[in-house]
Amino acid sequence: QVTFRLLTLHPNEIKLDKHHFYWHQFISGQIYAEQVLTTQALPYLFRDYHEMPIIEKKALKLSHGRILDVGCGAGSHSVYLKNLGYDIKAIDVSEGAIVVTKHRGIMNARKLDLLDETAQYDTILMLMNGTGIFQTIKSTPDYLTHLKSLLSPRGQILIDSSDIKYMYEGQEEHYLLDTSDKYYGELDYYLSYHGDNETPIKWLYLDFFKLKTLSNSVGLTCELILHGPHHDYLAKLS
Image 1 (cartoon, rainbow, N blue to C red):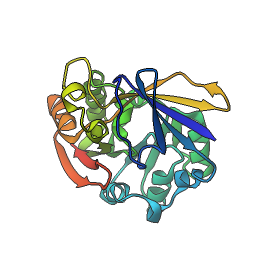
Image 2: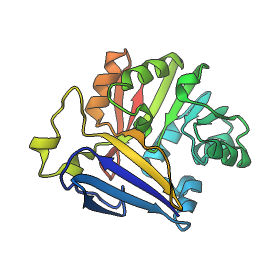
Image 3: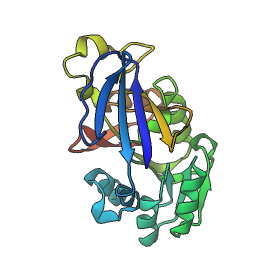
Image 4: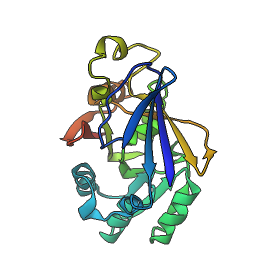
């Protein structure tokens, strides 16, 4: 089993639903949440189109032209689009993810950081909380500027995220203040496997209006496409 730990900087209880985590607890004055990924949950990483959430289905339906699948994971979105005949490239920073994606038939899959991609695309897919790759509010404009440079003249970025404000219900006056140095969607993730702990990674959840403001600041339009059932949404940047 693989264990994911999420740690916020706010020393107070937060509310989590089963869409994000299986259980949570309060430890050492910080918020600590743990998600255990068992072998029973692994098939979800290899889901087909009919098992995907409505946001992912909508994004795949809107995809066209030459496609870049960013943070492809096990490659489920790429596999679906390839079977429809699209020209698709899949990238991920995980070497294991790329091995799996190639094994599933996506030969144009590369271990590559988004900021090192240079080609242009008609559709850039960033799903399963695509804003997470931006890491922090401060670094988001740099990522958005680079994504803009990867778009063809009529290209689009299809990206999803969640507004996790609900996790702080009842504590808004303390923890939802929009300050220049901290935003409530900035989180730290910890990964452990059989006692081995990885270096924490930064992960970002953006509410739609924050994403729109940041996108507009670098010359991208931001359109809300769909609200999901778990405080999530799909947006189109162009």
